[in-house]
Length: 543
Image (cartoon, rainbow, N blue to C red):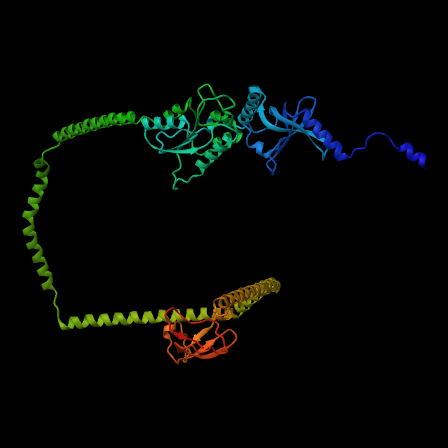
């Protein structure tokens, strides 16, 4: 056994796993404390819930794990994207938990303009395939908008140029949504501004713009990269408000220029496209007004001449009224004769009628007989109708038991169907729910009552302590005495005493009687007062 133990021993130093991992970590960090690595981003899924980002840098032969801490993520000028070729600056370190190494990135920049252009072209092809660049989906701009929304930086020269140009051409209400126009957050802020303007209500406190202008001054491809954001391009394409893109100079272009309804070469050009010239409109209106007035005058004069020509062709009033006037005169001449003839004819008819009592009696008898015949016919018709109604009632009475049985059977079937649907389970379930609710309320009531009682008990104890603190008995316990007269009233001053007054002294442990004297040197009584109620200038003494 000793020989086997001696053979297993070796002169090599033994290390723990932690010691080896720590040594490797120090070696790697010392040797690669600051490196620049070029590679393609792979496996990027955005920041983790902790705010850190984890992905891989790769080339055609190797892969390197990378991490961007949360604090560094907010300072990056470019947001990492899948497939982007970048140059990462940072330090190499190891992760002992998995025995691998990684680069902790402090700065990230694209690997030249070529990588950005390739990424931009890939986005352009994808959006074009979706139809976001088609001219058929682009809207016409309003000729005379009431409100214009501008999305740009509030501190740059762009907003001043736009407002100044609009004020010169056609003053109107301009709403500015302040955003960053450069940096990592520029695309997200401009997207939020476009969506925010579209979310405004037409009749809200802030008026919804009739036209949007997204503007920025010129710059390099990196400076304008925020306006190549895919989310921004989709927001502009989905905007219900027409959008004018005025990003960069005339030679610059971004994805928002291709998606917007109109592209302006400069921000000032966007203002010129957005509104017409008020002076030109006023001049055009004045010219059109003058032309309209002249046309109305000419048309009125032409109509007047036509009326005059038609009036000359018409006959005179005397000629038009000659024939009717003659017929009226002839009728007037015949009217008197006709009235006389009609009067004579009526008089002859009246005289031909001989009204006598016998004739009146005869007509009354004929009318009575006629009424009796009509009454008999009515009574016969009524008897016929009554018999018909009675027959119908008899038939209905015969059918009534059958109908009643059918109705009773139908209601019995409905009640049977309802009886099958009605069970006690809902009532029991509701009862259990109400019982649980009542139990919970009882527990809450008991707990509330306990809390209330405890709170009141605490307040009573506090008031008792305060009363004990403010009570005169605590003062008496410190060696003082309370002086009262024969009526039990408290004596507060020596001036209130008189010779021979009977007093009562209250101490902490009891009371004692005393008599007030004036100017005597009599010995003190056995009971020693706790305090003398004597003021300067008083001649009284207490026993």
